[in-house]
Picture 1 (cartoon, rainbow, N blue to C red):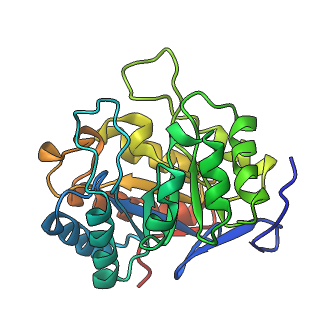
Picture 2 (cartoon, rainbow, N blue to C red; picture 1 turned 60 degrees about the vertical axis):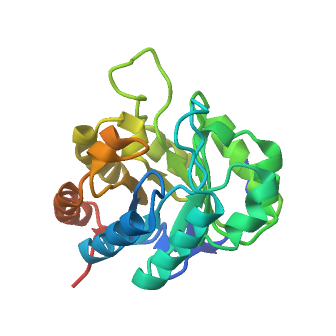
Picture 3 (cartoon, rainbow, N blue to C red; picture 1 turned 45 degrees about the vertical axis):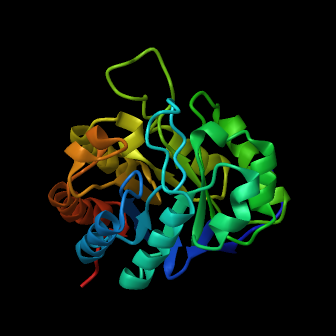
Length: 275
C-alpha cells in the first residue's frame, strides 16, 4: 500500500499532521480530550476551560452522534458545532468532531479544525472521498471488525482524493469478550507504524468502555509508540447524556496527565503542558 501524497515528513519519513498549532506525529504526544457529546453551552465551556488548564492539546466533542438506539441522545447538530467553535475561541484549543454524512462535510468543516470519521463509517467510501477533497485534517477510526489492511485502505481513499493530513485512531475491535466494551489492540500501534507513514493514536475510552481502565490502557499506548490519545472527559459523568461510564472526571484526567509525562519521557517523547 503506497500513499499517493505525503504531508510534512520528519527525519524518519513519517507524516506529521498539523491541526492549528498542534502537531500529531511529532515528539509531543497529542492529547485530545472532551465530552463524548456536546450537551449544553455551560457543560462545554466549563470542561473546555478546565481541560486547557490541565494540559490538553485539543478539544473533542460530538455534535452529531451515531447511536445504536434512535431514541438515545444524538447530539445538537449545528448548534453543537457553534458551541465547539465558541469553546475554541475561549481556550485556543483546536476542535475535532465527527462528521457522519457526506452531505454534512461542508457544514462540519466550516466549524471544526479536524474531521473525525467514526468506526461505523470507516468504509463509507463516499464519505471518505468527500473529506479527501477538503484540506482539513482527518481522524480515521478503525472499524469494529476491520483488519489493519482494511483500515489502511480506507485511509487511502482519503489520500487518493488529495488530502494527505490523515491520522489513524485505534479504538478497540469487537471480539468474543464482553466485559470491556471492545478489545483494545495495542499491537496495532507498532504494526501500523511499520506499515504506514501516518500518525496513529489510541482512544482508550471507547476501547474499554470503563473509566477505571482508561488510564492504564492510555499508558500502554504511549509505551507502544502512540502519537496521541483521544480521551472522554465530562464534568459529571454520572449525568452524561452519552458514554458516562467511560468518561473521566477532570480530577482523574489531571492525574493521568501528570502520570503521562514521565512515561512519555522514558520513550523519548513529551506529554501534557510544558512549563
